[in-house]
Amino acid sequence: MVPSVSILQQIGLGVLLVVVVLWAVGLVRLTRRGTYGAPAPYGRPPRSRARLDAVPRQTGPGGPPSENVDLTPAERQAFDDLVRQLSSRS
Image 1 (cartoon, rainbow, N blue to C red):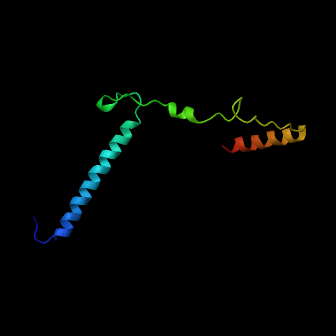
Image 2 (image 1 turned 90 degrees about the horizontal axis):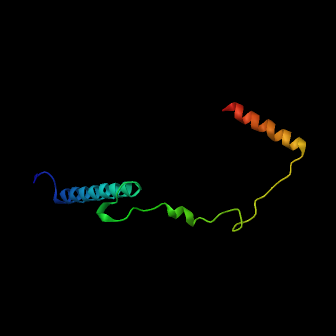
């Protein structure tokens, strides 16, 4: 124990070290959770990517109909020119 350091500073340092260790453990667990091909720790089955199936389809029989706009030949030509301008910049 260092005599020039107060007890509150020593307690604060201990609390800070515990928080850093807990953060590091949480970060490691979070990054391991994202690996789907690796075996899961502690014998748990790996998580699947089936959560994305919970998002409903936006078109088709279960969703709203897709929109369709008929363009005049002048509008189609203007759109083609705009696409050419934007693609030539990149």
